[in-house]
Length: 165
Image 1: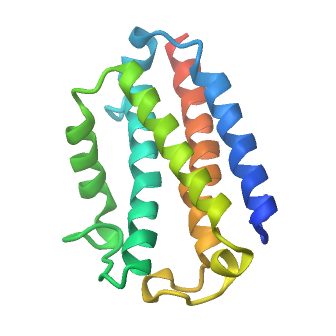
Image 2 (image 1 turned 60 degrees about the vertical axis):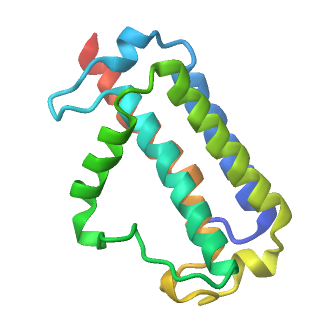
C-alpha cells in the first residue's frame, strides 16, 4: 500500500485501518487476548505495544515543535536495540488488563487523529522538518505510528488467533 501524501489521505487511512483493528479485537475476551504465543507475546501485548509507539511519535513531534532534543526511538536506545526497548515497554504495560490496554489504544488513536487534524499539509509533508526524521516526513512517521502499525498488528493478531484455534 503506498504511503499517504496528503493530510486527507493520512486521515482516511489511519481511520480505516484503526476501525479494522478494532473490529478484530473488540470481540476478544481477556483470556484470548492474554494467551502467549511461542515468542512470549500475547494479543494484549501487541495492542499495548502499538499504543505505546503511537504515543512515542506524538512525543517526538511535540518535543521537536517545542525546540527540545529528540532521541529516537527513545532516550538511551538506538534503532538496533528495539528488541531490548520493546521488552521494557512490555514490562511497563504487563499489569494493565485487556480493557485498559484497549483504552490506551483508543486514547493513542484519539491523540494521533487530533494531531493530524490540527496539522497542515505543509507540517505533515515537508521533508527534513526536524533532524530526527531522516528522509521521512512527519506524515509518513504518523502513518507508521498509526495505520501501518494497525495493519501489522491485525496481521499478527490474525496469525495468533489461528494458532489458538
